[in-house]
Every structure is written in structure tokens, then in C-alpha cells.
Length: 106
Image (tube, rainbow, N blue to C red; front, side):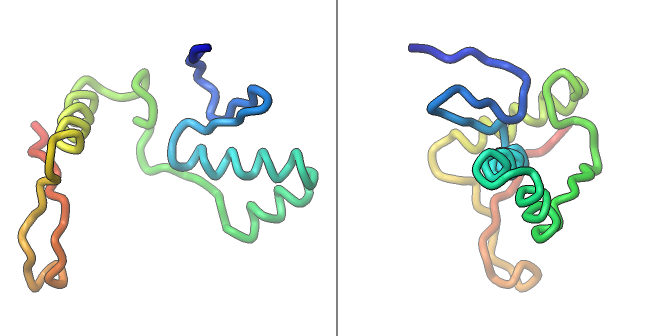
């Protein structure tokens, strides 16, 4: 048993289905709704949740991202994987809520 990586956002490999990322999870849910209830129901659900993705950047896959963006993503992932999240200070500006401070991007 292993994994075959593919570039599709939603993959049906009976009895499994997987989605490649956050918005692909919505794509996967709509694809499942289509399989169970038909395309009209899936499209109606898409309309009800007003899912009309229009990302502001075209860097959502490694082959599309610049070297600078790839380095920045690596830093963000490394910071997320380190023990204890790097929490920023509680301030009046952020409603006295701690926030995850992103690493410096250069």
C-alpha cells in the first residue's frame, strides 16, 4: 500500500476520496454531493455557500510560485513545525488576543 501523487484537486480512489488543500476540500465536498445527489444539487450547494473562488495570487502550487515565495513558504512551514507556536504579544490593537507571528520574509 502506498501513495501515488497526482496534480488533481480531488481524487476518487474507491473506497477513498481525497482533496489537495483547503479550497480543494470544498471541491471534494461538491464532487461527493454530485455523486450522491446529482449535478443540480451540487451546483445548488455551491450557489448557497457562494463558492466562487477567485484567488488574488497565482502561487497556489509549487510550479507556479517564485523562488522567493517558495523560500517564504518553507520558513512558514518550519516555524509551524517547531515546538511551541511563535505567539505574538497581546495588544489592544489585536483585541488582547495572541496571534501567530509569521516569520520574517526576505
